[in-house]
Structure formats: structure tokens, C-alpha cells
Image (cartoon, rainbow, N blue to C red; front, side, top):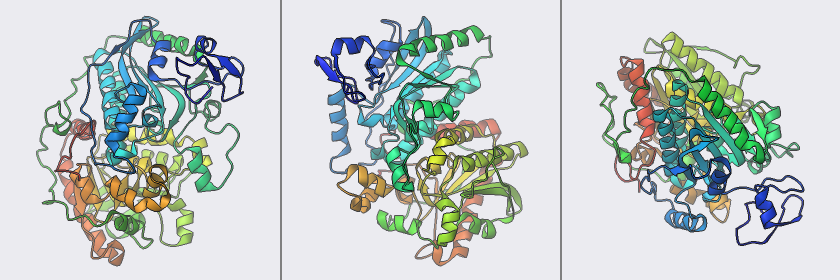
Length: 578
């Protein structure tokens, strides 16, 4: 049996697990599970739906968002050509199929991902479709079932694809608040941005037998750590042993498990107050009125400065002399009192946080800490947070909300810790919970990308009311080296990948990801850290002050609107991205 379910025209198929030659009709009768060794083949989304829902009950959602190519990405092929090939090869419009159905006569909304379509990657349209499915479930007060199969965020859409982790997570948060059941079914494989958001922040997480799930893929972990991976690493049984899923379910039993969950949710429902009407997303996505204007918006620069070469900016963002979070806490803030620990058994040195004052006003400051020397970088794990680091940050955010303090986050990380231990401790779920919590945190949040903003590890501290970026910082869905290794002939094409990813401050300002750019002294921050600290302090103050008088409910609503608008953006919010 090949990696995907065999095509209908084939009479025989060889199992990739035990090499047995299987008659196609027998294999289909067994739901594409090898009857000899039990290996579960990957399923196309239509096949998955046929196995799970009641016959003739599925109705696809009518929404068809506009096609997007938000950053004009080109590697060896233009992105639109890759989309065209994926559509021709799968017969699908995108990497997810969404609709309403009944399962065991219980109504539900489903979003089923298809790995055949560009690796099931999470792009703007996929995020938009899943978010609309969640919004339909909220409007109808029916459970949402997410069937995941993905390699992660879609790098051809740059940071806009990263934003989908927050967009979908806040839709799941709305269902959680309304008491509507959400269930995710992890299938093989589920990695990256999908694993670190809606795949793991639902009420119930089921894993199909043989599924693999994690934040970092096995190849990345081996390359970074140089270690052999444990037997069965990241498999469904591994996830169950480490407390990351509720149960492991063979394919033939999956429908029955879902029926039981839907029946329990239906029986447990009680009359509730009406769900508040969800305000439409702001304008740039199309299909929705603009959000109400902030009565006292933060001052905005007249426009972004001309962008330096993207690869040169990457090198500046990584410079070992660049000011760190502790440097800024010593110079831009006063009276810092560090708070330690996740209260579950660890204190991650890659994340620092605690109480400080900004112009005499108490704030909670949380940030990644790298260091300047090799010894400091190693001690701080190069600013790559473990699950304990994300949980420490979450604890401090929630403490700030209880105390009525605003939160300032300083982001400088190549990404979350990709180690074996981090996966064992639930890295994907820790990131997902931070993103989910930030979408509903009832206190002002200002995030500053000070150096590297790497993937989900950065987003875990950057779901904010205002997102600022230092002039020579970068923010990306994947490192240029990682992107080049996947899409270009070799890693030596990293400079070209950096330019294609649109990861600089001016690029992201034009895309509407960043609200304000913080100037650095010439030629860069590490040449005059004190001047940089003054610029950062002034920018944080200017963006934070207008938020302090906004009622918490309004603050959360506007934060959600901010990320909702990234669902299927056709063009930049402040002019073209090209």
C-alpha cells in the first residue's frame, strides 16, 4: 500500500508496511487499512467524509473565497502554477473540504483536510474556509469536527499563512466560550502550524491509529539535535503515553467514537443565552464591513522606509550583538522583577518575564532571551522556548489580566525548541494554548519583533492588539534556509528564499501584519543599544497608551477582528506587497 490510498482504477496494491500484495476491492472494504499488518493508508478528503458521515447527508459550504497569491511568491515555479497543478491532481479547490452533515443522525459541521493538496498546508484560503466552518457551527450551535492532515503553514504565502493559526484558533475559542463541542481527529501526518493551533486546542483530540503529530518534523529534529529518535516517536501511541491525545482510535471505530461524542454533547445541552452576533471581518478580505474605528488609535508612521535587501536584514536580525530582552528590560523599562517557572516542574531559560514599569506605569513584560556569547546562547537554548517556556509565558499573561496590567512581549527567536524532549512535553499543544489564550486575554497586549520572529514560536507571543517591528528585524513562517531546502535546489539559495518570503518590516507593514516600524540607529541596533532602547520605549508607549482606556470586551473584539481580516486577503492592506 502506497503512502496514499490507491486509485480506483488499480486492481492490486502493495502495502508499504508489510509488502503484502492486496486486492483493491478487499482493501476498500477494509477502509484502506491493510488486513495483514493494520497499516492505515492516507485518505483523500472525499473518502474520509464517505466513511464518517451518514449517506447523502453532507452539504458543502457555499463559501468560495477569492484565490490568493498575497506575496507573489516564486521559487522554481510561480505559486499560481503550483496551485493549478494541485487542483488538477486532486480535483479539489483547496486543501480542505468543509460542510454540514449528520453523523449517526447528529448534526455537525466538518472541515476535512487533504494532504494530497500541497501537503495539506495551511494558507489564507484554508484558514478562511475552516474559520467559516467554525462560524457556521457557532451560528447553528452544532459541534465542529476537524480532521487534520498537514505538513504545516504554507510557506508560499509568507507570514499571512502564519496568521491563520491565530485566525482559526480564535474561532475555536468562540465555540469554547459558547459551550459548543469541538473535536479534532489527527490523521497522518499533522505537523507544524496546524498541530500548534486548531489540531490540539479543541475540547477532544482523537488520533487515528498510525497517525503522527508534532510541532517539528522528524527530519528537522534529527538535523538539529544530531540524535536518533526513540522508537515510535510522534506516533499516535507515543502521543497517548505522553498525555497529548484523549484516545487512539482505529479507522473502523472512528465513526462510532464520533457518534458517542456527538450524542453526549446533544444530551448535555441546556438552554443558553443567545450567542452574541459576530461582527464581520474588516475590509481587506472582501465580504465584510470594516471594524469600528478605534476612538484613539495609535499614531502611525507616514509610511515604511525603503526595504534593505532581505538577506542582509536576516543577517542583522541574527547579529550576536543585537540587544536582547534582558538588555531592553535594563534600559527601556524600570524596576524589572523577574518571575520564574511554569508551576508544572520547569523554568525555561529561553523565556524571561516579570513585572516592570514603563514611564512609571506597571506592565508585564515577557520575551525570548538569546544572549551575546556562545555560552549565553547555549544556556538560553538560542532563544528557542520549550513547552515550559510557553507555559510560563501563559501563566504570566493570565496573571497580568487578573491584576489589570497590560502585557508587552519582546519576540526574538528562530523558532520553538525542536528537540525530542519538547515534543514529549507537548510543544504543539503549548503553542496552541498560548495563541488561544491571547485571542481572549482581557488586557492590552503590545508585541515587538526585536530580532528574529520565527514561525509558531514567535506567534505564541505575538497575538496582540498592536504588533511592532524593529527596522532590521524579520518575521517569517519558516527560516530562509528551511524554505530553500524544501523549494530550491539547495540551501545555498537561502538569500533568494529570504527575498521571496517578504519577511522584512517594510514588507510586513504593507501587508498589514505590522502596525508600526521602530527605527534603529545607523547602521543597526547593536551599534547603539541605548538609542535603540529609547526608540523601542517610545514606540511601545505610543501604541500602548490608546489601548488603556478601551473596555476589555471591546479590546478582545477588536483583537479578533484584527486577525480575522487575514483569512483570505487578496491584496495588502497598505498597498501592494510586491
